[in-house]
Amino acid sequence: MRLALLQRQAKMVSELRADLGLEWANELFTLSSHAAGGERSYSQDSAITILARLDPSRALELLLLAAASALQMGRRLPLSSRPEQNAGKPSQ
Image (cartoon, rainbow, N blue to C red; front, side, top):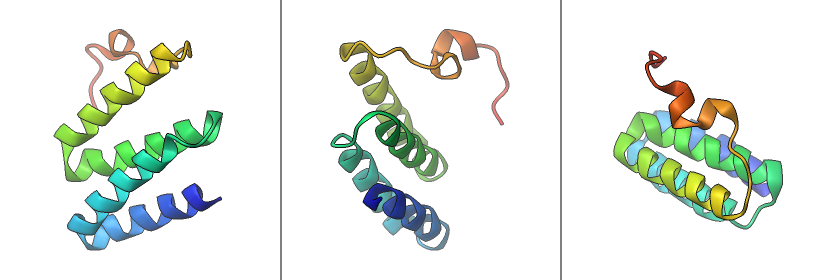
């Protein structure tokens, strides 16, 4: 519940103040490590989405970190998240 609220707040504030959006998106990603399953994935995805607009390099860094963490825990990545599946696809 708290992560969902932070996700909404981070999205809103990122549209008004980029500096705060960066802080809150990074905090959302950090806090998501304490969540389980779908809530963790959803929160990480939300944080990375916000950061992709504000700081693409940081977003990529966190995306790779999330992927490495998922692989270490033995979780499979969705097909759309696998780099080889997205190769050559235009970005939206």
